[in-house]
Image 1 (tube, rainbow, N blue to C red):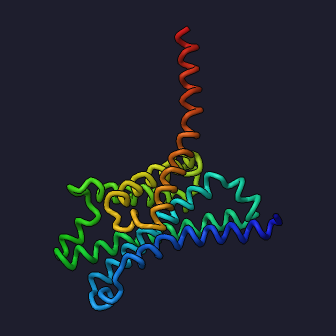
Image 2: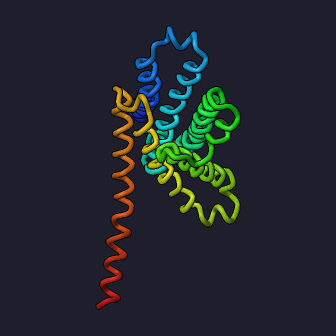
Image 3: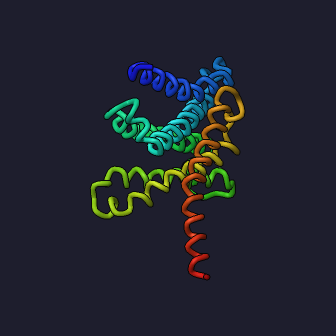
Length: 219
């Protein structure tokens, strides 16, 4: 298989994964009712931004985790794709709660809008807010990555993206209205499983190394 064919397949897979969420949302929606109700219309866009944000976040983590392999397929464009998609991912992450802010404002006024970004009684809503905060820190660190402080602690800030992913995944798994419907359910569960396996593979060698060192010290 030629390099060009590999790139075409990569972009096709990327597009299919990305569209799985919006396709599921549209499939689960009665569009005739949405067009006649502003609240339902905003809710539709909130769901669309939610599934798209989750998918882009998963792809971002995959790109960053296996960048060496993607360089073999995409060449120098791999880093450009990673950075560009990261900006779009955060844009959708930001728009999603703004949609909720509008819905809360419509129902409960200005107080409801303010409470959107504060911790609440619903633990899974709070998980979403924590994920948003961690991703914001990660984006800021990425923007200032050439600064000495962020360059020295880049690995720590990079880990925040993984932690944020699991907060977002828990948020979507328990509150998302479309995560259990095909085809997005396949992407959603596959993303959680894939990132979990990757994290375990990274942590396990470190833990075994520490345990081995501890045994030597005890002896």
